[in-house]
Length: 179
Image 1 (cartoon, one colour):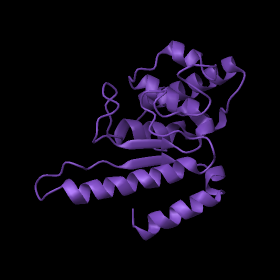
Image 2 (tube, helix red, strand yellow):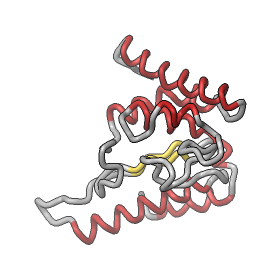
Image 3 (cartoon, rainbow, N blue to C red):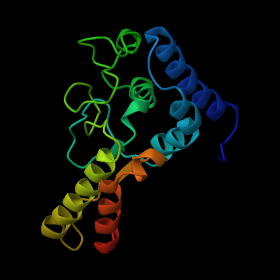
């Protein structure tokens, strides 16, 4: 992963250790994906993802789906560190009953979470559906010189996600539609 130096490395390590600390405090969770995927997630969120932490429902935001929902602390760390309404106390309550940081991301529970994920492959299918919706909206509302729908969907999909039949079907559909 190409970074621009010490500041990028510090940001990536902050994501990693915030995730590890929350998993350790909860005595439950999955630290592997947040450790391994932190560099790619950081680069995506810092340099490519179009989003607004003060308006998580902004209609033309890019969508990010963490298909491997068991790695939810990666997403919660990104949301917290980029200014979404997710406090350090919320992070400290990771995987606790009634918290805003459940063991798997839940849409409408945590600001900035785009899809409820948990069953492997479910998030990938959701992301393909979002991309289909984006294309439809762009085709129906964009006009030459007036592009109002120009967002994208990004997903982190694990090897376990890709072993599920639903992922094969979603990938086939995405390829057929050239998403």
